[in-house]
Length: 331
Image (cartoon, rainbow, N blue to C red):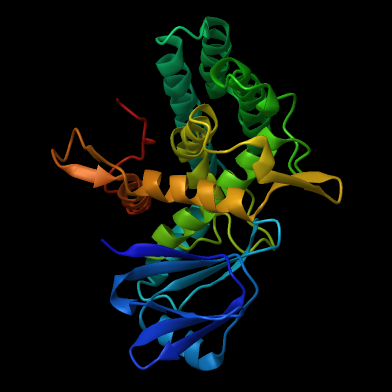
């Protein structure tokens, strides 16, 4: 299995013959075996050159860049090896066709709702008394069918997320991570900082998987396609946030891995410090590699593989091979 590489230090990333070398500003070198690398996440101030970009492009390796606060800034996306003119035209046609676009938008939100419910039901069975939240989200899910515009669908998803995120206070037994309301730009408390940071990581993981398919990441269905560089990854991430990002958050807090000391306040916001980022990235990476036995395939697959399989399902729907239904966790 190929690895995701995370660079937090400042330095220079270079090509050294047929491998990569990261020269750390404070001294020392780390070699990165190219054949085992799938993507590189760059959090530090890292210098690169054309020779390096040519090399990673040949090897199909994505470079993801994050800002000082750890939020996604952009990617170096090698030339598409799997471009399909017909599929891209079909994807664009679905976006421009009202009924076809609404079908996908509703399915993405349906998948998000169902996975939120699975998470809440898991903790409800363990004595956290989440019956009220579960009932409210089920009611919103039942009402989803009557809405007919993307704006309405996103509004009802926002209502469900508000209920869902407030339930975190019952799952997380730590007053340092109390949820009041969702605040993104900037996150104004520690739980919002973790949600935003985790979502940003998931967007890049999904983007990496889109690169391995014939789909165009710039054409989404729930999130509007505009001057934003990518939107399909945001759509797919909605389905997986509850079972990847949120479960990672519960783990790092409830196991005492992330503490108050791992955050800092700057420019009116609360952000993970470097140590906190490393701890959370490690947990997210571990979760992406975790394997479960797929009930249809009868074999173990990783969470990363589940994301790619979701993209293949979208391809099949676009090609009229099989109607798309969102992934819902079953364990």
